[in-house]
Amino acid sequence: MKSIIPIFTLLFISSRLFAADLLLAQEYTDQDIQGWAMSEKLDGVRAYWNGTQLISRQGYAFTPPAGYTRQFPPYPLDGELFSTRGQFEQISAAVRSASGDWQNIKLHVFDVPKAGGNLYQRLDVAKQWLQLYPAAPIAVIEQIPVENTRQAQDFLKQVEAQGGEGVMLRNPEQRYTGGRSSQLLKLKSQHDAECIVTRHYEGKGKNQGRLGAVGCRNQYGEFRIGSGFKDAERDNPPPVGSTITYRYRGFTQKGTPKFATFVRIRDERQR
Image (cartoon, rainbow, N blue to C red):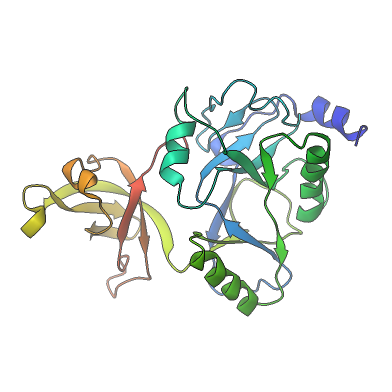
């Protein structure tokens, strides 16, 4: 390990992240995943350690508490700032504030982009670092070899039953490359997507006088989203022109998302 650190230091200490450099997932649609690796999809905030600072998906630098990254390695890590299931709002609020509470938030690593070897070997580099610095706020996400599709579906049910979001499927022999990749897939009972808010529709009944639904537009066309909003969000709806995340289950005969449900406004500083 002592011989590895100086090499990483020389090669990667000055690395800089841009949004296009990140590995991004496609949706699972019955691809052959035998021999792949699977892990829980964590509902946190994507973060990339470039060797000197933590960067968001859009290239913004996070401002963690003093000393938070003191025991981070001098080479890149890709992962998710995460504490526990069901805490996305708290995690998001903490990491976007210069004075946020990062207690219990760790960088959960799913790749060491510049390391050599397959996925398991690259992650072993991070595991070796943690043997030297066990107090570092870093965790390596467990990768489970996939025997067949049924095993992956059973794992998905287990994760969702425990309040998890879904499963990530990865070809472990694939090198880390930026952009959308068919070698990294999201497996979920519901799919996520994003759209731009085009208008507000007033509600009826208990929602009269406030938001009933938003009009939305993306590659699937124009459609409405009327469910998933909390009372506070109906009183103060996502602005027209903003980008929101929604979940859906398949498509209608018209080709628009079926059972679309609002999840959250996208925060460009973190996505």
